[in-house]
Image 1 (cartoon, rainbow, N blue to C red):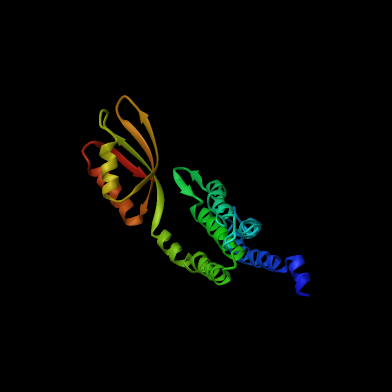
Image 2 (spheres, rainbow, N blue to C red):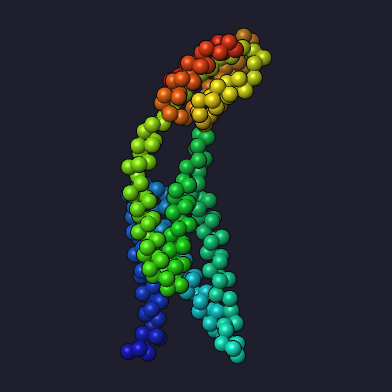
Length: 225
């Protein structure tokens, strides 16, 4: 029975099944959240990382020196998991209207690969513990994130300033009120310069910033939508 298990590599199959399970747990949360890297993607990443890690160990143990050390380097293939997974992570990061989205998905993909590598190396406690922590971050902190986001909003503002006045006048006022300029368009006219701005920040600060712009002598008008 022991010889059959060794022949069929049941230990390795067990590792891959565990990697499938752990990757699936995280992938299910991502799938339900409507993220691009969902159930199947995370499962495949985790299993692939585990398989590469196991392969790295197997290749290194093909031959041994007289003092018992393996000829191969057990970290060589495994090290490529870290750099290789960066391509998938980069593909999940998008720029949309001046804002960067997908960072959480990219970080999750990176961590799922780490969990798979841990399974492949036989560090089962590390892999399971890491999975639990990731789930706590993704699910447990979601209500906190929603509360924080509820205090911020995005507005479209149209600001008209006198000709010859630079944008730095407006930018300083907005920076003083801790607002992020997500988008900017400028239109030159004979009588003024018009800026269409996409602003992100706390509700109270947005209103104060608009009021500060209206009070500035170089600003002709400032309205928000």
